[in-house]
Structure formats: C-alpha cells, structure tokens
Image 1: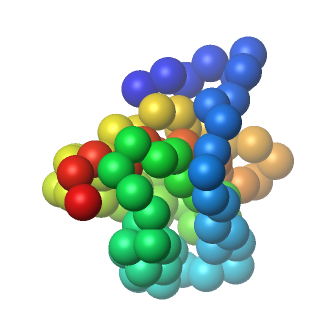
Image 2: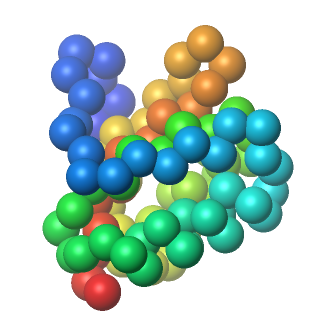
Length: 85
C-alpha cells in the first residue's frame, strides 16, 4: 500500500460515501465493484472513521489491492485496484 501524498493513482470510477456510516460505505462499495472490471481502480471518499478498519478488511477478504489510503480534511481517501471478478 502506498501512503505518499505526492501523486494519487488514477481511477476508473469514484464513490463518495461522505455522511454515511457503517455498514453503508461497504455496502455501496460492494455494489460499485460489481459494475467494474478486474484491474480497474475505484476511488472511495468517506467521512466515517470506521472505514479505516473496514476498507482494508474489504480488500483483503475480496482479493482487491488497497493502493493508497490517507486522511485529508476530515475525509478518508482510498484507491482500490479490483482483483478477480
């Protein structure tokens, strides 16, 4: 996982879950990745601090790669490369 603020990965799709709380961000991520292809990158924006625990577990459980994670101005940014479909 890259945690550098220098350059953010490019993404194929973006999901803004700002204002939503567990389990809604993860549920929306499940729905979003169904419409994407293996190898594509999803950018997720969240405001729920629980996502710092839930997103890495989501990735590990489903075989996705968490490319980048950071907190910025009270929001959490995640870049996820989709694994197998």
